[in-house]
Image (cartoon, rainbow, N blue to C red; front, top):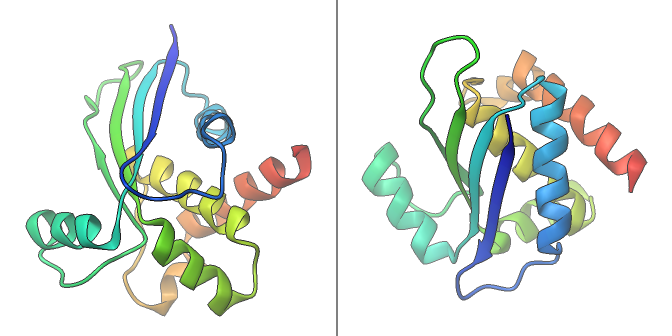
Length: 147
């Protein structure tokens, strides 16, 4: 069993080192006891994520993170997924919520990883009280404490 995580940035600057992004994703996988996974985490422009958002989710405009999980529902099967993050949206979110941009980027890595694992939340303001959000914040707190 193994975990492989590929991190890249396409025409954007990311305030979090690739090694840190990988460590955050590994922590999220470990928190869910996932031992066999392949993740691709790509940082993209607002234009690129808006295209993905329209094509795959039917929503207009840029969003912070989009995840695609390709997991067989069988117990013990490998987790395979793609996560796309828009650093510019993350920066705006960080300013709005008064948190450091690196924290917000780490939050989005955890958030995207949990979506790949099959977790979901409401689209309304109720998302911050959802079980997924609470799990995300617990993982993030552990990640930030270990930094």
